[in-house]
Image (tube, rainbow, N blue to C red; front, side, top):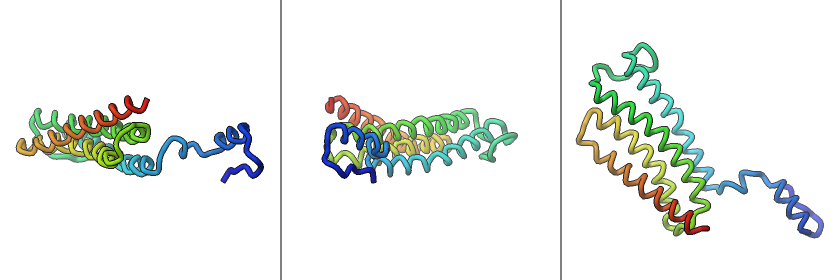
Length: 161
């Protein structure tokens, strides 16, 4: 779109680089796809927050949620909502970091998908465990994914120096 037609000099390449859309320099198409999918999760986190607000205010504010929850169940609901936001942000950061990390190509997509899956599994598991303790394996699976994806990308970033 912004190509220089004349012979190239060092000044031309600097000008061309300056005119290049910023998104092409920072993000790969895979990163854009995964960040787009991650952003689609944000309205579900907002709705979850409204539901937690409805639960803790006994339906005075927010969206209607389950009634007659114990204090422990409410704590699990709060933890689920908090982890959803934090781990989705971490997953989005990891999508960008994968582009710069020296990791084997066979790990790139599992790390990308695993980062988003971890945020869904961990936050969802807190809501599930509030009602059925037997579903805590979902929480542990998500926690392992969080640890694995962050370690792989972290080591990959150190190796890429």
